[in-house]
Length: 270
Image (cartoon, rainbow, N blue to C red):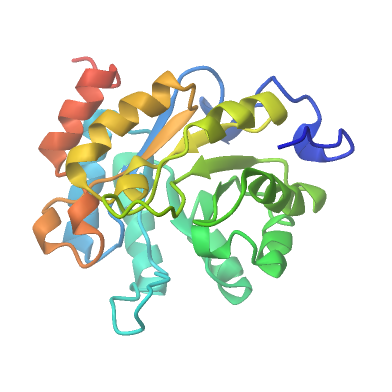
């Protein structure tokens, strides 16, 4: 991969991360890794509140939860939509955590912005250019996940679509790419973390849950991501993974998540 032209905004100031503020006192890329955690999908008021309390008590700083779900099968759970947004926002208010959720469509952007503190562009939408451009016009931090078959350069240029429209609060997320290896859901590309810091000014976080698709691999990959210099982690946590409506096999339960946070030094002090 050749160096990006300095005319690109992603390349200006390359080599030095510009922190992205989420709220006063909380920024991604400011030196202390930030952990984002919560369930793949918001399923009910009880489920998202239980997840929010668990991740907040363990030391997570941002609550995640999907409400518009892009599923491979049209018959899989598609999320709760507006109701899910309301439940996610209520759980965030209850715990004091800002919330992040994925926006799938330009038509959902205004509604999502009413409830979410951070917008997520998922892997399948990394090159949905009309959506990227619209997200570039709003005053919200954006987590841009790498496409599951995207090159690093394509990922950077997708971020450029957002930056070029004026939104400077972009966070990249490496979530694994599709390879010939069937033992894991995807293959985590930690070189992308290093190259992001070398060639852009953007903070980069890692999603080990989607990268492997297997609960028992999440903790080791989280350690590896931080060792590679990631500015944060996004981890799926469900109160009861075996009952999850989506991605239960890669979700940690609250006890497992607490163990991970304690091991990584993120646990809250008493």
